[in-house]
Amino acid sequence: MNDFTYVRASDVEAAVSLLAEQPAAAARFLAGGTNLVDLMREGVERPEVLVDITRAPMAEVQELPDGGLRIGAMVRNSHLAGHPLVRQRYPLLSQAILHGASAQLRNMATTGGNIMQRTRCCYFYDISSQCNKRTHGSGCDAMNGYNRMHAVLGTSAHCIAAHPSDMCVAMAALDAKVNVRGRAGERTIAFGEFHLLPSDTPQVETSLAAGELITSIDLPAPTAGLRSIYRKVRDRASYAFALVAVAAAIRMENGVMSEVRLALGGLATKPWRATIAEQLLWGAAPSPGLFAKAAEAELAPAVVRSGNAFKPELAKRTIEAVLAEITATEGDLQ
Amino acid sequence: MFHNVRQFNGYQFLTLSSRKLSRLSEEAQEKAHLRSGRSKNIETRRPNLHLRGMVFELHSLSLRVNGVEKTLDIEARVSLLDALRDHLHLTGTKKGCNQGACGACTVLVDGERINSCLALAMQYEGREIRTIEGLANGELHPLQQAFIEHDGFQCGYCTPGQICSAVGMLFEFAAGAPSAVTKEGGKLELTDAELRERMSGNLCRCGAYVGIREAILQAQEVMAR
Image (tube, rainbow over all chains, first blue to last red; front, side):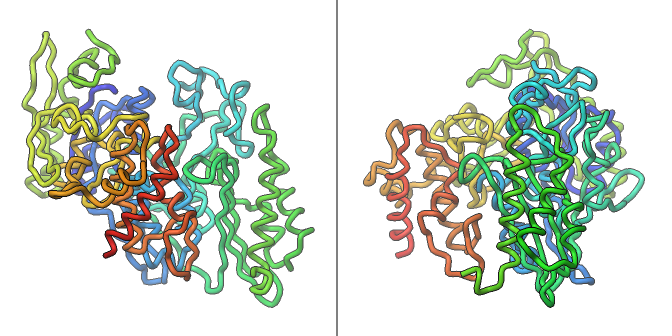
């Protein structure tokens, strides 16, 4: 691990001021450390200054006047997943978080840190490999290498690295908003616009400006009667990254799906809101044929490589199974 | 010049190629102080060490481990795991993968289990840290006793992490924390599925899982009495 200057900030303003003093590439905020410390040990991240925000007061979950929830950026993943209001109103989010990492890591990892975590692409992690995300323009060893875990949606000719988060898949489905603070003040970024597709600039992963800090996440008030499922398909039963993950929340009214929220993990270069499928499902009566059509349409743009050609079919089957289960009547579920 | 030499002892002295002393100017720190309107918003303490023509920035850090306050001078990049093992000589906590994958380094912080390999020691000042050395209280902790009785190990390398993790897990379980396999609305029971899921962050390369499972179930009963 490279040497660095460690600075502790005890509030948001001090943290933002401190980071703003540094060249963009030279400084990082340090929260739970589960990803950043690992990346520093591998030499992928080599910050000259670490601004520790562990003690900045951002660890509260508050109810918003509109019935939504504001989640502080420093709320630990385990605390968020176990929070009574989250379990009650946003079980999809609780479930998604609990499907990620291990209990130890969830006790350390924070909400803001989870959103900022980097891909686990093995070539990104190995500094002797070519990676456009690490070194822009150097090439991508994943294209014709080990790419079983890689993305099939939202890829570009420069990067096929999958976004690793489970929590973010649920947040994409729930239309979360990211509140950030920088030197220029505060602003709010829609979750779908926070993470960027790799396109020609895979090294630019989020719409955060240099020096901006995530302070909290807002969840809009949940619709009554929404039923949700988070299903993660992986190589072992627990503690593994997703091959495919499906987050779905649907409200049934008079025999039709009056609200449909569908997002995918493990498949794309960013937390993937399945808008194509949603459009086909919204307002329609559930049927196996429709589910297959919606899944087919969502995966139609998929671009596969040698190792991940199984993913579109696995994704379609998982989507169909989740939609069938979620729209089944109480009797069917027994 | 040393570069990327990984060592256990003296780790903090051997991994440097060169040293830039604090990129953060005194002026920048002062400005941040003023803007925040508080006197102690930013802390940097530097009892520097001069060695072979290089300057190493050390921090005077106070850690509370197993109920005892210890002060140590370390570099900021020292993990909590290395601070415990190499500086405080509490070698019960083990270094397995050093990347948060195996759980051998699990310790308890304010009663919650974490991977000490991914924690920088600096971040844990003022927190209540408990390691395997601090579990027994005159007699063995019920989990330590149960691991012995049920052969919850073969080589024993993962055992301190398994036991600390199980202590944290049983606490989480008793507090009603959900897991990925918990059904909302039902009664929380430590079924096989729950136990496997909740302990999945600790790997045992000898495959002593059957004994580990039996030990945890026995300890849960003993601790509930």
